[in-house]
Length: 76
Image (cartoon, rainbow, N blue to C red; front, side, top):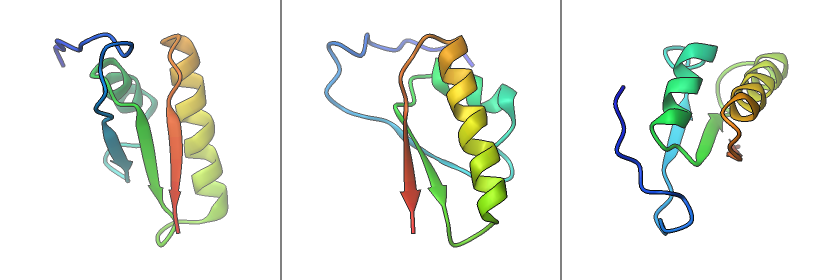
């Protein structure tokens, strides 16, 4: 996934990605962070608390590897 991301210091628009079964793998999360995602949205209408906690830890780990801060939005 090639990216021409403007540095976050200069960018005012934020990119929000909804995480679901097709996008919750560590590889996909890393690719999304690399593509410029600023916030990951977890839809709490689906899945269990354990699943959401696991995905949130995965997001934090991949963000740390990429040396980037990303937000996590809990959509109730």
